Image 1 (cartoon, rainbow, N blue to C red):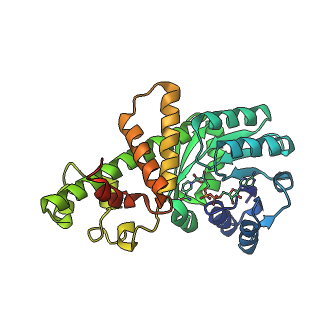
Image 2: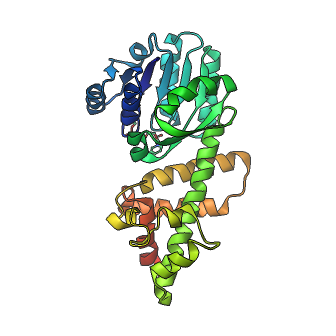
Image 3: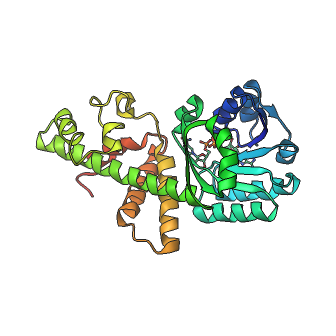
Length: 296
Ligand code: NAD
């Protein structure tokens, strides 16, 4: 078992660090927020006064922070204090460019680095069933895999530096766009007098099938576990979907990729969030589409 420093003990990082403790690792942590520190201390994390103290003597360091600028600043702060060949894993969802820069900073400091964003949300973080999408060398991936297995059930090596972030935003661009068109189909069906169950029964076994439909159906009824059945409580908050769609647009602009539907999805979620629905599940956009039908 290893000594693991965990930086960023928020909604995701808190339960992830707790699962590392449960797996028998010695976990040393740091966060800027007192409540996060206290919750992690209660789950067995040895909380330190700052990041440098937390990483001293660690075999591996995990960061789970809001955005690219936080990751780059945090890595710049602790890398000088990390032992050579320390494994540094960033599990945050950040832009591909910052992820590559973090890898470069790590390499310059003699660390082994991996970008490893997750899907599965707070539920998956708590249950230890996250999917990790990893970018980095074979050696970094091989060393990280047993650590990530304590927090997730699927660990995928997507390629070199930045490939994990690329996989994450491409996947979530598909998710955002399919959710919108699934919502549009249910809203159209209502106006055509077709029942939601009938549309579900046909589309879920036909060419309209997708995860947005069969696992996360945006109307109550056909999929009892979907957020639509609990007044669109997340789940996956619309604000986080917007973040990922914007990262996809940034990446697309950077490499000159045409993503017109991804751009449209980002705009629609921006409107939804601006209207005060950032904390709703992203499938709640169906209510927005119903309401906007006359004006769009
Ligand atoms: P969060 O805001 O709950 O947690 C982030 C934590 O980082 C906060 O507690 C904050 O105080 C801390 N922090 C910020 N700067 C720091 C620093 N320099 N050193 C130490 N701690 C610092 O966010 P979250 O929901 O846990 O998300 C974390 C990352 O995971 C984000 O990149 C997010 O996009 C991604 N993500 C979230 C979900 C989700 O459902 N919440 C799902 C998949 C991916």
